[in-house]
Structure formats: structure tokens, C-alpha cells
Length: 204
Image (cartoon, rainbow, N blue to C red; front, side):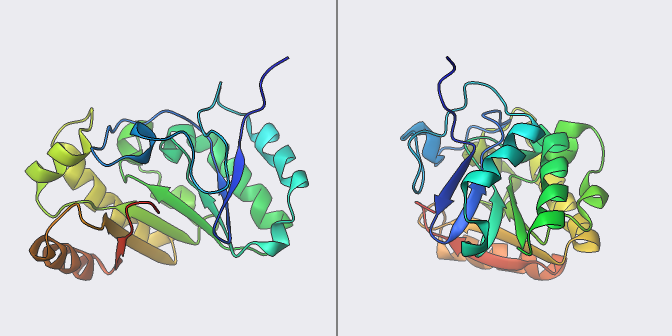
């Protein structure tokens, strides 16, 4: 018998969707380097990637109406499983009156080899992109992307594209990982894009 996988899990008052372990980044501050779980989960390491049908079936086990928001975010980068993400988002939109957020590193276009931002229209209400650092070189040191330094500009360009198709675009840094001066520069980047800037707690 296959061991139970945690596909949906609760964090604060939101329901999170864990689609994949895959990620092109190996961030120095990533939670999964030090722990197996986040929020009210036991382990977020997936034995395999769930199908869209399996994810949708999991919703029957939860009182979805009790949650504020539904969030695509697990131990991997959600856009690594983009086709499944879209099918699940379509289901959520048709079944529940809940806002949907995508937490992403912002290089989904590189991962999927196309501009995926237009495909988010009508499915995702908020895209939260990890900005991490205002300097491309320092950003590269922090995130250790398999795509190298170009990841920074790809992330910025993705944020700009998302502004065209998604109601809310948020760009974030992790508290204590950069200086206040760097945070100020991050705010300036966000202001130019028209995105909201958020400093999130390390454990969030």
C-alpha cells in the first residue's frame, strides 16, 4: 500500500496545495533544508507528484469554506507542475468562492519554456513572487538557481507580465536575510513594476 501523501495542508487560516518536490532553486534560507513540514502538516515530501484528479479528490476531505484563501505552495516550485496547477485552479474557481494565490520563485517561464502569465488570467487572484534581493549577483548567491544569474531578470519580467493578467502581484523578501538598505531598493523595484512589497517572516 502506498504511503499517504500530504497534498493539502493548513497554514494559519489558509489551505495550501503541495504539487511537487521539484524546484530549480536551492535557496540558502529554504525551510525544506531544515524541516519536513510547514504549518499543520506531517511531511511535505511527496512520494510522487499527484495528478490533478488526485488533488481535486483531496478537497472532499476539507471544509473549504472555513479557509480564507487557497494557496499553491509546497516543498517545490508549483509551476513545475503547471498543467496540474491550472486544472486544479479551474476546479476551485468552479466549486468554491475563494481567492487563489500562487507562491512562486518567478521563473515559471524558464521552467515551462513559454510565457505562462497569460494562462493565469481568471484562475489566480494573487501571485506572490520571491524577490529575495535587489542585486542580481547577490540574488544568484541566495537562490542558487540552476538557470544562473539570468534568473533575476526572468523573475522581474515575470512580475511585469503578471501585472497584465492577475489582479494582485506581490513581491517579497525574507526578514533578516537582507539589510534595510536592500529592502528599500526592493521596494523601489516593486514600485516601478506596480507590485506590492512584502517582508515575510522567515518561518512563513
